[in-house]
Every structure is written in C-alpha cells, then in structure tokens.
Length: 138
Image (cartoon, rainbow, N blue to C red; front, side):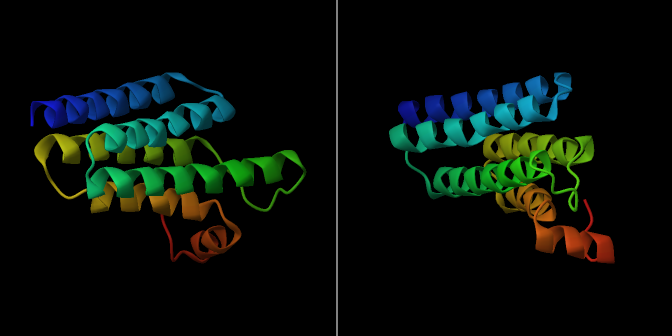
C-alpha cells in the first residue's frame, strides 16, 4: 500500500513538472518532446503499481502524442492544411494539470484525458475539419 502511494505521488509530481516545463518552453517541437514524458511516467507507474487508470492514461497520452507528432511531421513536409500552435499546447498543459489533480483527489480521470484527446484529434484532418465547421472547440 505504501508502495502504491509512493508511485502515485511520483506520477502527480512528474505531471506537474511536465506542465511547468512546457509552459516555459516556446519551441513547439520541444513542447511535444516534453509532452511525451507524460505517457512515459504513466507507463513507469503502472509497471510498479498497476491501476487501470494509469494504463488508460498512458494509452490516451501516448496516442495523443503520436497524432500530434504525425501532424507536425506533415507540416514540416509541406502540408499546411492543419495548423498547430501554442493554443493546442496550452490546452494539453491544462489537461495534464487536471489529470494530476484527479489522481491527487482520487477523482475520475475521464475529463482531463478527454480534453487532451480532443486537442490531439483537432490536429488530425477530421478533427481540424470539425473545428473549422465549429463543431469542435478547444
């Protein structure tokens, strides 16, 4: 039990550190790099103290990172249809902060993860189209 609490506290502390570092960083590539640490700490946590919430968090964070990474690759190769800017990362930072809060308070992680996943989806072709139509807002 004490071991589980230790790893939970480490997860919360690391999520908050990631948010702080992302806020200080101006380069979008570096922000994405820092965001990748979020799924990393979630994966390390469930390896030592398994919880379905940790597993779901790692999956959503990893998937979100991958979607955004692919879009950034597309932008760099000349695809200018979907733009990624600071607002996307501000919303991810907000979601990560809320995720840390949810773990700390033993509350549902669904809303924070949903916020992060919606941001990632908005960088895809389909998500950006829905954003342009006004159906999806950040």
